[in-house]
Image (cartoon, rainbow, N blue to C red; front, top):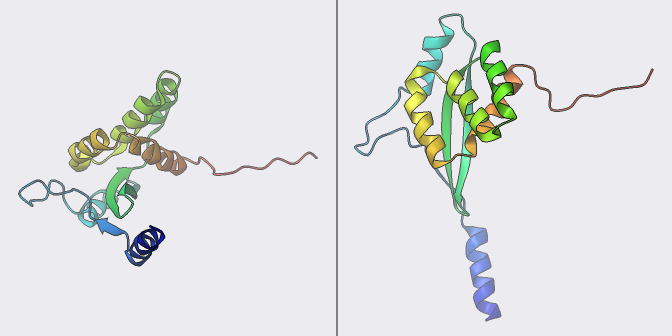
Amino acid sequence: MMEVINEMDEKVESSQVQTVPSGQENLNGQEKTPPVEQLKRKYSGNGEKVYTVSASVMIDDYTDEEFAFVFMKPKTASYDRYVKMLSSSATKAARTFSMDNIVPEQRDFLTDTLNEYPAMSISLSDKLLKMLGLADSTFVKKL
């Protein structure tokens, strides 16, 4: 029995995590959204601040699925709506904040992705908040 376990451990150690590209293609293999680079060029050319946010979701111990989204810098109204909704439902607030700021071409893709992986909205909203100045850590010193 111990030999079987050791063999299994060796197989796990020797295997690598496989990365699967995001599902930005429909079932026919046609792209649902334009490539991220194309979207970045389109929106950054307008003088707007745009950001690429990448997320990796662990499907199982051996497979990660990677996603890439293009977001515009959140507006104050979107942030205010997020803060207001936060007291009633953090998940809904995060989802709405993410949907408010995604480029229009990726709206359906983000909706599908968040339906499949609802917790991703929290990760995305965290990155969006950092675009607005949310710090990872702040310090205070008594004078």
